[in-house]
Image (cartoon, rainbow, N blue to C red; front, side):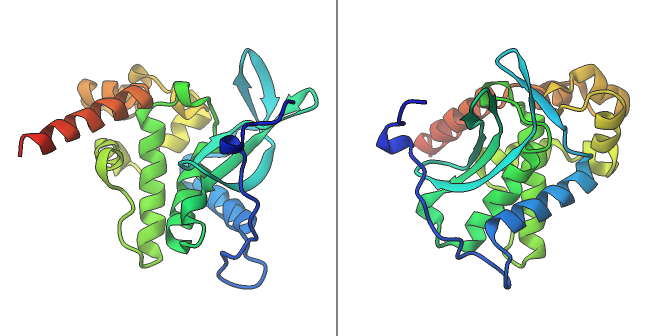
Length: 218
């Protein structure tokens, strides 16, 4: 693989973020994935990308000059799943672990960013929000992510609904469709189900544009 440009290279940093001996970022990621599995169902053991099926091998956590996200490092004739966190916040334990909680949900049924839906982002935000509050850090959700999380309210009156959908109908969160949501959650409105199954990139771009417009009109 050719060298990545400097701006795309992860920073190599020591694992200074811990709650106790041995509790590194990798330990936290494993713990958070286990918690996410208990809430939303088991992690998919394979995923599809670029027309190929890959094993869901978690390759690790790294700091990166950008916003937190999962990515797909390639090695030999295969690839895996990596978690990138913001290098700008590497010394901020709260922000780093909040971000790690969010990305742990994306590790359950990974898809490329262009295929991710509002439902998946909302579930990740709600999970990170609860983790943050449990640790005494206050709410995590804000801005467009809070808008997405608020759409989940009628769906999450049934705490196990996502787990049941993934176990019985569609294991990949971002491929859960409108009809499936309405079948498992009759109180959900068709309009809300449609927004939850919208591509997240489109949703967030629109929300940010509307927020900017509202600010300019004040």
